[in-house]
Amino acid sequence: MQEALIEGIHDPVDLRKLSEAELPLLCDELRAELLEVVSGVGGHLSSSLGVVELTVALHYCLDTPRDLVVWDVGHQAYIHKMLTGRREKMRSIRQHGGLSGFLKRSESPYDCYGAGHASTAISAAWGMAVARELAGDDYRVAAVFGDGALTGGICYEGINNAGDRRIPFLAVLNDNRMSISENVGAIDRYLANFSTTPLYQGFRRRVREGLQRIPRFGQSMTHLAARLEDAAKSVLTRGALFEALGFDYYGPVDGHDVVGLVNILKGLRDADRPILLHVITTKGKGYAPAEVEPESYHGVKPFVKENGIESSGSPDPPFQTVFGETMIRLAREDPRLVGVTAAMPSGTGLGPYAKAFPDRFFDVGIAEEHAVIFACGLAAKGYRPVCAVYSTFLQRAYDPIIHDAALQQLPVIFCLDRSGLVGEDGPTHHGSFDLSYLRHIPGMVVASPRDGNELRNLLAAALAYEGGPFAIRYPKGSASPWDARGEILQRPIGTWEVLEEGAKVALLATGSMVEPARRARALLVKEGLSPEVVDCAYVKPLDESYLARNAGRFEAVITVEEIASPGGFGSAVLEWLTEEGFQVPLTRLALPDAFTGHGSRGRLLRELGLTAEGIRASVHERLKTQGMSRPSLAP
Image (cartoon, rainbow, N blue to C red; front, top):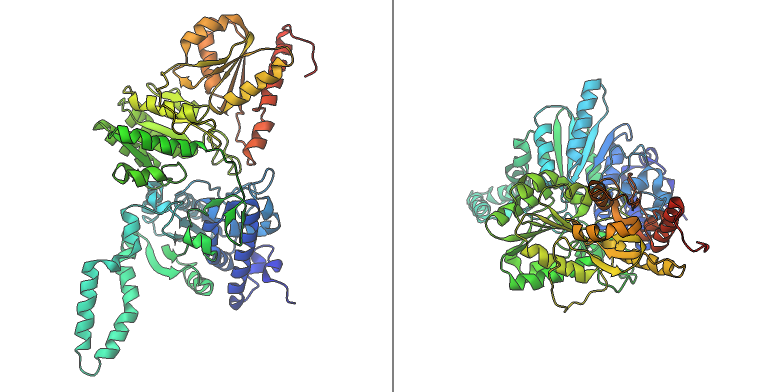
């Protein structure tokens, strides 16, 4: 039996030894192995299924890694990893100590640029092309963008700049009409199908009728016109935008014809000017469930590949479900409520809200800056926009949060999904910094719920707040306990709740760390210690009344938060204690001042000491350091 082609591919040099006729079979083998790997360990599936042929063609035609391929949103680069010496490690992808689920420069010389967020490829690759010119070198530079990147403004900034100078540069538009959810916006409609418009259809009909009236030659000329029609459409419609921006446009071409792609790339790779190659692909190509529901198979847990059914997960509702259902309840009572998201309706839990209130829901695409400013415009005219964005993605909109929302005291509600550690997606997606970058903004309220009921009540409080922007951060995880039909009660702003009264040591916990703090206390009670546990739902403003009444009676205060330590909740408490003259030893348990790697969220939290056992150990360490009296029990 002949060995599979894939077994002989250890790097792109091996790939280039194959004949063009062998490439389709290799693509089939890669697609099958990708499905086998991701169904077993989870990961990003449909995006990489869609670029199998394109990835093979690029590495076949370019001299990588000397020639550079910059990928937008690294979740479409699994095939790239398989072709560049990492195939045998693919089952470790996104696992602790294993391969990253995204592009990572330190992982391989073939990963010339890291990519976890969208719309960056054009700008980064253009910078590399200019660096090549400045150094007088001659390597090729290609950027693969799309998969939603064209809904982001950064992409157009890069295209506008790159098209201004006539130097060699290849931009490949992977047009699958998807980001994670279906693409939105005028540009997508423009690229989709101009030929369906009445103007084009009327012109087409008149031309054909006129040709058919020509004696003897009418029929053959009609066939010729049909053959020229596709090329004309491209020149007159899709390509016009990119041609106007300084690129020579080619396409659209079939992104699943690997031999055709190879022939096209061979003709374009040595062009002396900016080239844009428009490639049409199908997200989820080759796996029927993913082709039918590409959004559902964008990022998956392990599943049964024969039927696409995911392995059973936690029955507890996640925060995203609580958020979406609470939005619907609040919107029924308040017609001012509007939902806004940046290409993440399903990921944030706004999908059901969008169906219930389609006129009050807006998906603006991968354009977080625009999302915030758009929400500010709504707020300026009396509406109450809720801007639901993953914590890591909201970092892109930092200036509008200050300049447009806070400075103008506009009541925009920011709901930061995936705050804290997100697990397998790693440092590009951890929401490690939101408390730090939000709490020092004047007029900003920052809150963090411990469970679904508290999230519901904080949303109600945010909706009633008129003083400026209000941010609520919550993790990727269970929101239990949550009573779906429970009464909505506004959580008074700037108030904390004492969950367990105690003495000597105070555990001030916020958000996801409240429950671990309670469990830590239960362990400590068995050892003769009884720390006080406080749910600090509001990080800004702090509950200064509680601190003023109680700070003096504790011999140690320990703050617990799932956020980077510098500038976080613990820093806020330390600042207050110092300014008010309290000499209370304070320990801050938080994420480190470093980029945390990837792995399961539970494992990462254990390693960082942000579990009940870790908090317990920190209490003992603080007691030992302070020389405080405590029972002499083994920890």
